[in-house]
Image (tube, rainbow over all chains, first blue to last red):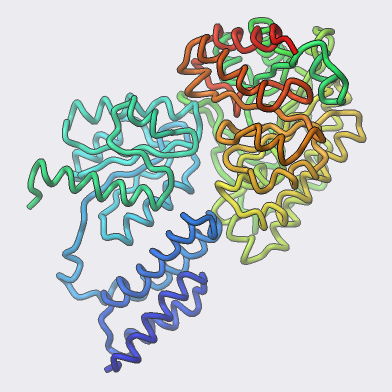
Amino acid sequence: MATTEQRDAIIEELKQGVIEFDEDQVKAAAQRVLADGMDAYDAIMNGLSAGMSRVGELFAANEYFVPEVLMCADALYAGLDILRPHVKPGTTAGIKGEVVIGTVEGDIHDIGKNLVKLMFEIAGFTVHDLGRDVPLEKFVEESIRTESDMVCLSAMMTTTMISMPKIIELLRKKNPNIKVMVGGAPVSDDLAKRWGADGYAADAANALSEAINMIDTLRDLKPIG
Amino acid sequence: MVLLDTLKGRVASSIPVIFTGAGLARELADVPWEALRSDASVLAEAQLNFQRQTGMDWVTVYSDALPIPEVLGCTIRFSPVSGPLIDRQMSLQDFKPPSEIDYYATRSAAAMLGAIEICARAVRDVPVGVLFEAPFTTALRSFDATAAIKLMFKNPGLLRSALDFITGVLEGFSAEAIRKGASVVHIPDPFSSLDFISARHFEEFSHPYLTRLIGSIHRMGGHAILHMCGNTESIWPKMAETGALGLSLDQKMVLGNARAVLGKSVVLVGNVDPIHVLMMGDATAVRRAAVSCIETAGPDRFVLMPGCGTPPGTPIENLRAMVSTAKEYVV
């Protein structure tokens, strides 16, 4: 059993391993978590997830860019692969909501969408990723099938962005309370408002804070069991 | 030839105006994507029609961003929403560069080169331009982008080899385009933006290849305009160092700031908002935005252009309003 000092040191190694995108360090620290009988969920939340939060701050401060974040994500997933199977049942009760996400039809650019997905996952959301070049109707079908709280639409091209208001309209017809977030290079806050979206994600970190606000609003409307 | 005069640093009779936008040209000509990117006469007529309808100061031969990735070996499929898409990105690790490049063996590239020749014969009062993406963006479009980006850290030598090869392919394509009659080469480089990579990575993986390509284009008698999307502020001097005659900036950038940093050493190109103003605004908003650009960055050493490609669905009246504003602007 690890002492408090040993536990703190291992957690710090996980955190720094993510920040410095050192996969080997993360894997070694994750193995020590298991070998020392530490709580895997604690290591994920206070090590890996805390590291990724710091990465989000560095991204927001223009110290990290997309390539650095992708490298950090690899380190994070390397740790998650080792630790996740050892999380005790019941310790992930802090799920914040269910989200359907995808890049809209005609668009194959998915790096931004994948970063947003990653931020949601580490914050405890359940993410249903439809991938890229997703037909309009698929967003509606999946949001109904999964009873999700929110749908996130991503587009990198002006030609594909213009399908977003159609998807929002279809979603609203089926579920007036569904929250919709849009994002991607050509999208703006102004366009999101015009199309009736509930939120606009300027970047992955902003997407997460918007999502939390939106789902909190939803829970004010209808209690989620 | 106000565009060439301006790019060459001469005093032009009016402020040049240019647009790019294959989707809009296709929409105006009412032709299918498949024909636009495979038939030189269809592509030429669509872009000539775009020039005639707007009165802009070039004919730009461009069907989509994918002919060069196709030359490199990517396969294409068509989306009913956005037209051509890369069906399968290649793996950079497994990529075997072809020993010989034949641009005419790829229909879309051959169509562009054929269309340049047709356009060059058809117009005398405006230059013919050609558009293809920069080496770094072409690499990320052609190869699995996420894996290619990680090579910056994991195997930079492999990424540099690919960029070196792609730059050679683009130099060869430029030579053919210029030989067929193109005099302006417009090079968008959206993935080199600081919204995506750091200034350090731009210097390492984009700038050297841009500089080499632009140097080749100028030695062959062409005139290069470099366009970057998003935030580019801290790399403006480096963008100018590539030797591009014109720097085209996104609407997020303040042209007056760029002029203050760069002085009159370079022609600034931009940057009316293509979505909120051109596509969604009216002619009054377009005129106001155009005048603002001219007054902050021009009127000399300046080309009026949207901050990026002009989207399909943009009212033609708005484009005409932008052209007439520049033509009527009294220096």
